[in-house]
Picture (cartoon, rainbow, N blue to C red):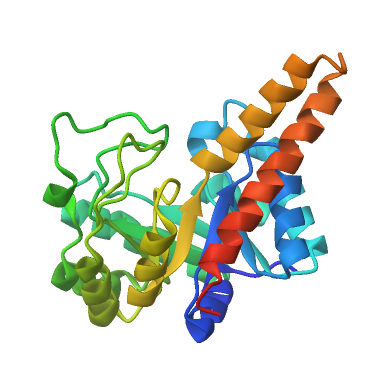
Length: 276
């Protein structure tokens, strides 16, 4: 069933668990995520990141995402790419203006929130900044993650001024693949949860240890963005299938990748639901 972000995060808050957000770059990943959620009977968030638009434009994959959500046996929220997503019928948008000055971030976020709320759409914003972009590449040279951690008191003022439904915070995670185990400041999570009273979001969830996830959820994280290792699971399965030489059909390779991604998503959902 299709729900918005506020509704799905209410479930997470009641259970003291977290809901996973998985990028649907195409129909295989979309089928993998929905299939995993249905098999485990757990809510899920599917998203289309702007960086992936070159592979499948949102105008092509977006309607399939909303249709899949409506037909799913579990609550599903669809999120991303603000104005085009609103026209397609997404139930949630994410505004990331964290690279801008605080006042400009606040102004843009407030504007998007007013437009989205008028359409019954939930809004996630970001305060604080990760030093890597959506592709996993460094955006801030020689930067230390702790230099960009979210300030709890600033977060409180930001949330009150904008009226957002969820806040993504910076506390040590990064996009893409980790070269070493990330050092997470769970105190930032607890303080932001207490100061804002809102569901908090972890970006850069791939590569975090199970213990790290559990501690973050206990501190107030209610949504976890997870994609890189799901994609890697599909890639490795496709590579292995091709090397076995059993088929020359692309659809066989895609199906193998889809199944591997589904199993990886199931593992993640089980961890995120541990507090249930």
